[in-house]
Image (cartoon, rainbow, N blue to C red; front, top):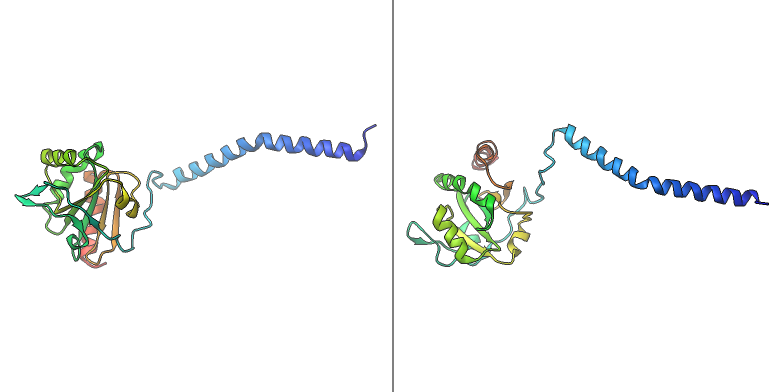
Length: 201
């Protein structure tokens, strides 16, 4: 004859097993609820916020891309001296990066804007390929530093390339672009950030 305590234990075990069987469904429903909440909030779920915005830009001390020239002049290494006191767009790029090729004409156009100093971090690339890329598409950079192991990119909080950082004349990161620039992001986001930085806001 089964005692009442044994019946209680058996019932509680069945209850625990039943609850465990529903755990995956509960977890899935929670994820669906979170995702749906983001969708209806109107936020861009692909946007990754940068904790560096509003903070001092990481130090720069990267070797030059040997053999790179601009307007007949050797392009210097990317050091703090190349950006100090200038409103600077730091662009992280590589020759093997297809979106980098897509955004490059926009960088070439921005290089004509004398208000903006554009520098590049060449990420995990081969120098000969990087030189060929810029030789083919043009060089918008006043300084380029090579980052063969991605150490500098880690310091800058890079998730994937291309990424760009607008650094004001005081060395503070004021804007970050994840992924390639488009005409819309240049016009609607970067240039307003440039105007704001120049106004000291």
